[in-house]
Length: 151
Length: 151
DNA sequence: TTATATGCAAAAGCTTTGCATGGGT
DNA sequence: ACCCATGCAAAGCTTTTGCATATAA
Image (tube, rainbow over all chains, first blue to last red; front, side, top):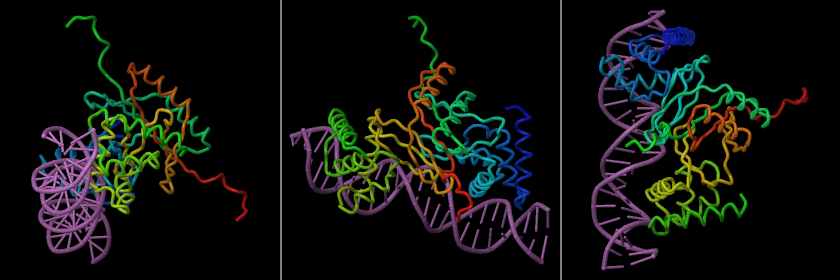
């Protein structure tokens, strides 16, 4: 969303990729820049492919390869929704969030909740485990409160 | 685990299936009984197939079809782990739980935590949404606390 | 008797991989 | 120069589907 967020991740990504001895080709550059702009919440490999097919900047094989690299380097999270398709989103500690899925439309809305984070920390303590990561998915109806009998 | 839990689900399952106008063939019976016994935590379609291939009681096609039916009827939950493979577990309100995944081995341990449930309810209230379902996955290291330098 | 269940084999969809070529550093 | 990146096409895996047959109610 904000330019700051985008640039922050982009810089970190380029840095770690270089650091890992990887090189910037056309495909990787295209994928990374697309993600920096629009990869903040659940983008599938296919969506990335579609976006980039238009400009012919990356083949599907490269898209999948770059996505894998980014996951391995901890720059991307890979999640699976109810359709079993992998979806990716940028890892940004300052933008940690979870997902609320509308039962009706399947629409996904990201949300942040500090008290939820604290609750999860406490669960870890009760279980006697150091929690290194967590995911929460909520399902519910997003429809507005019903208006009074006004067809 | 306990026979009570198994029988409870089995009875409910048979009832709803019948109610839905579905019929009990050999394959469905085999799948449902296997799940009642061992489907309490994350079993993949392939595992079901393997188990049943031994006795030749159900083909893969039937396994997948039955699994789908059970999900549609709310008798089974379908979840996706980090490998993108669908895994199923029995829906039993009296055995509601979440999952803790060991970073090292990938081993999954189910856990219950009432305070976590309450925390999630509160999140729903804060978001102004009625929560109809939720999933939590925790990741951490299950290794025991290190013993004092005693090789 | 009629709608559903089943099995097989083929197809579908997402993802990975082998290989030859192009390109970064 | 050396090694990594890329694209294409083929292969891999899980899951779905078409169709003919069997079977529950």
